[in-house]
Amino acid sequence: MKFFIDTANLEQIKEANELGVLDGVTTNPSLMAKEGIKGQEAILNHYVTICNLVNGPVSAEVISTDFNGMVKEGEKLAALHKNIVVKVPMIKDGVKAIKWFTQNNIKTNCTLVFSAAQALLAAKAGATMVSPFIGRVDDGNWDGIQLIEQIRLIYDNYGFNTEILAASIRTSLHIVRCAEAGADIATCPLPSI
Ligand code: G3P
Image (cartoon, rainbow, N blue to C red):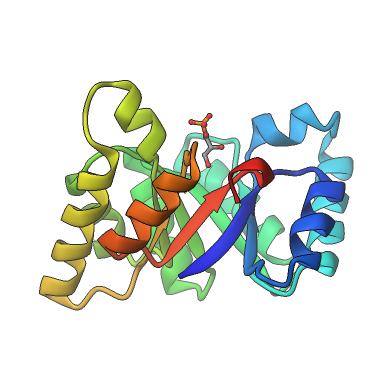
């Protein structure tokens, strides 16, 4: 199982990296804002800094919600560094954009996944990774771990090589249960590692 850190905080990224068990980083616009990183240039520079700290995939999220906007942003992000994975939301145009990125050899992380049907759609479009938000599924009184089990079964049934990146992890028990359920990756803030 791979461990990613879910933050844009450079100190926490360094600390997790020094543990020697860090495989990658996930970020999102709210995590960037939390660090006070504002404006396009600062955000792009911050991604490059993270890529230079960690030898592994770094998810950088698009903000647009229309196909053309996502493609334009994603191309720019992917050109920053070879480790960038373009994070695309699970919405109709997002699926279309993931397909486009796949055909153009750009890696993607399909985010905001809350159901097995959405995970199946993301894999069909060729997503490199899919991010089920297990904590938020639990918040809605559903079972986030069961969602990971369902996705694992579906991907294995059809040989999809999309990696299951368990996100919205809140506890170390979540990580262990995700490992049991066959998630390929767990991403969480430093205190959960
Ligand atoms: O990776 C998704 C994460 O940033 C959201 O986590 O705990 O706010 O649901 P949470």
